[in-house]
Image (tube, rainbow, N blue to C red):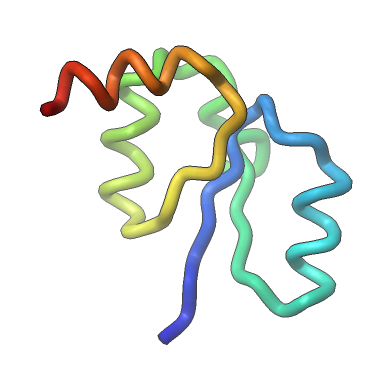
Length: 68
């Protein structure tokens, strides 16, 4: 099973580079042109692409709590 990650704008580029060196499929918000999307729309985009969102944005915790 392959894991496909989606890196939010808050993740340092060095993390993305190291994951790619290890063969992990990584797409960044910058590459996808979504760096300005609001958090709720970014979650929809990630879901649409069937990727796992990797973020360090504390505001996503609020969205997660709202979803419960």
